[in-house]
Image (tube, rainbow, N blue to C red; front, side, top):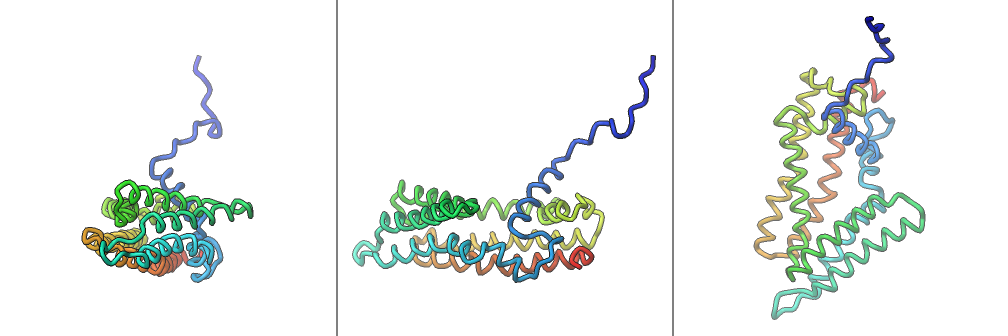
Length: 247
């Protein structure tokens, strides 16, 4: 006896593809950072939110700034080395204070915990080797991974920017059939890959030269000051591609 035809609503749902899952993950992260093209927000507000406001900026900049300032001020003229343990202790301590303050205020602690973990891992590299310059190794690895991911995604035609925006705008991977969107997302991914590559090209020579002061200073300069304008460019480009959503 033949089984009755299955009703459309009873048919099994299609399994999400890898691009769907990746787009959802990237889109969710972008939305939490305030980068939702469908939201009504000015470019300035979006960039400020992406940086986390004053608290986010301090959590991102202050630990590294304290490390490089203390290390530079305590450099021994004879050995040429600064007080590594004091620099690391104050840097990690400040990151821990930010985390505790957020816990006490019952605020989201993701950014603060991320900063604390980053400071702790970087300090571990420097402490175990006794070399202050090794404090920057985790940053090099992060830039290399992010830069490679953006570059590869652009070259294979699956821009990470496009995947995130496709999820946020509810069109999935349909943007790949639009030449204008595909071209824009390609160049946006290349721009982000270029940012991470530039950091490595400028900072790695200073690392191998063991110039800790210059390395730490340029790391700060090439951090938020370059991140913020690229966020603004990305936001404006995406809004131009989706004018109805912007309205």
